[in-house]
Image (cartoon, rainbow, N blue to C red; front, side, top):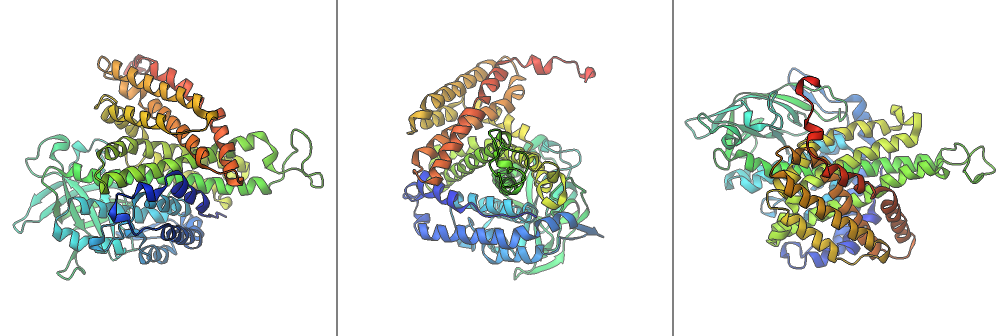
Length: 578
């Protein structure tokens, strides 16, 4: 049975010791009321909700799944009540605009809360994260009328959100979507077409669902320059904001999936559905990217939450499971065997999960801080850095989350393959995080092609200079310096060679992203040890950091050589040979 406990001690350490949030926010008036005591209370209450309300219904939701009948989608048992508690507690509007009922909390704080909710029940939180993302998009690009109508309903959880991009023939390549929009005499639009893989596109958790739909107007430019964005509600709002007439949008079916079975993934059909333009005509993709970038970070947090959940299950099992004897002799002489914790390879797996998860948590909060400073302090350097780090956060956090889930399953051995333990569900539910919101290969190409190459590596170099200037323990200084040099050299190599080799960015991007992730994690581990105390918590930090530097960081040596290889190693084979 799955159990979850919010890692409150580590969260407080990161907030108050590593990032010193009050100093980081001191020039942001909007955060003046967020005292340490308030932050601790929010963490405690969020952890309680995750532990007591969300986790207990996770495995049953996986077994039961969402159900579709004649266009009606029913969520798993207990989801409606749990969603009502999420909504009723104000958790959906945490970082929302206070002018429309949001609480205006820092994204840094939102990141750690999302990790809890993802870790405790991925299936349920998928409904919530789409709602949060839709509200962010409308707040950024909607008209005053749209914001006044939709945001309070989304923040309160009375209405939920959905992001409708993908079509059968158009996944990553959104420029070839076929969904059409035609303007009506009343200034609204009529949307017709089909979308697939629409998370939370139809369900029974809320009284209305607000779809954000990409479509093309007649005569629109080809490709992504001709995409517009529309609000398409399931029920057309009445003048008082209550749900009115049913709109021409319906679920044609739900997908049978490997995991996240409690989250309804819909085929959505639009038959002259009424839509309301968001932003300007033909600027829809830029508007939608506001929501997509939020969702990409959130999906990274899904991987992070899965890693923490997997670690907790694996540690508990390893302590209790008696198998074999320690290499140096019995540690439990009165028992039939020693616990799994005496075996070096089991410790390797547990330490790997812990090293990636705790560094990933620090990294996620760093991205949240850059977003806060970019938005509220008008810090352009922080904004640029957040854009650089977002694809790393989505891809690396979800990659390591899945790796952690598989390692936890391995700790369980055969019992990890049995549904009763819940570990195989973590593996299945986490796998999707590497695929949706832009596959991790796409994220890596975005990092190299759109971020590093586009500005000649300027933002990355500035970030490396910043990391190099931070105080770290002597024991890690030389290793860190070598990693900073390595990242700088491979970046210069990619910049120099890409001009003559159009395939190079795609050939090396995944390895480059992993090398960047390992380097950033190494820096964060060194910084955490620098500010940790000498108590048991601080000693565990140092021991985990030592493991990371000794056993995980050396992977950068192989990645460096792989990045130096020519793209011909990838591209030489003739298409017909595959």
